[in-house]
Length: 67
Length: 307
Image 1 (cartoon, rainbow over the protein chains, first blue to last red):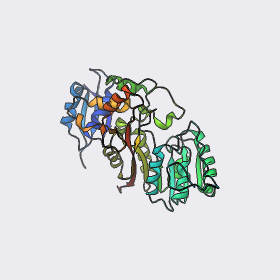
Image 2: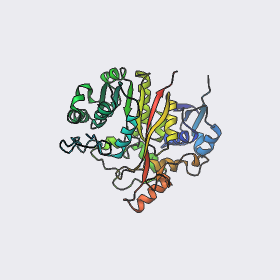
Image 3: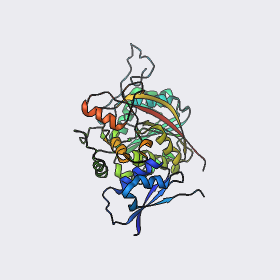
Image 4: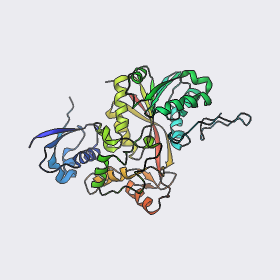
């Protein structure tokens, strides 16, 4: 499964990031390419993944790291 | 002299205060949002500054800032080209001695997206704005999201009032901005443009804090501004503005681990003590469309942080 689309969630809290991801997934279906999601360094990737439920498999979360 | 109802000066009985021309396509200058915004503008230290208002509306703030805040020059523009002409007329009648300090950017200007607007922004000390923070109920992508949360659109919410663009923005069009997720895409787009074209300018922006001031502050910090709340007031929720946007946001987190971390801020009382979620507020509205609901309006000053 490859990634063809990216979603910038930098600066967002965990809850706002989940909202943005769910909005981006509206209308998408299982089996479509995953969306690459950049979340801020303060975000908890595990909590976001848990809150996405079954939709978590349709995204690939990437955490920004401080340079 | 009074500029709008709610300011503290008393009109002279022999020379009644001129009233602004306020056609139905303009945001009503008597609205408490304007009162709150002007309280913030009074505290924003605008003496001698060059000010640009994005979304000038009736021009009531131009008159206020030039007359009462001591700004040296005022630029302004609006998406609706009729409004910049209206602002010129209102400034000429409300504060004719300051009309020469007003430099309008004419035509339809989205944010600051024309060469003339960008040139004036580059010479601006303080950018002021009160932009919509609710996605257009007719936006197709937002409609799909709302339906996925099983949130229905209240009857009549899809009808467009004459001043529709003063209340709602085309949500999907601003989806590249992360804070669009909570209705702040248009505001975030402006902050980014200001950082690019006027990196030393301060901003003073008026918000309906229905998503909470914490999230608004996060948006400022994420875009290189240190926020400070300089005015606040609890106002009645506009009866004509649809709140299903906020209900859908809460609904999308319902049943998740993050549900408690995002609840909207509505109130059942004008003191702002009896808090309601958007879901609770919508339920009250469904029972009685005339029920009085309230939310905070606040003015946030953002100072650019050195990179």
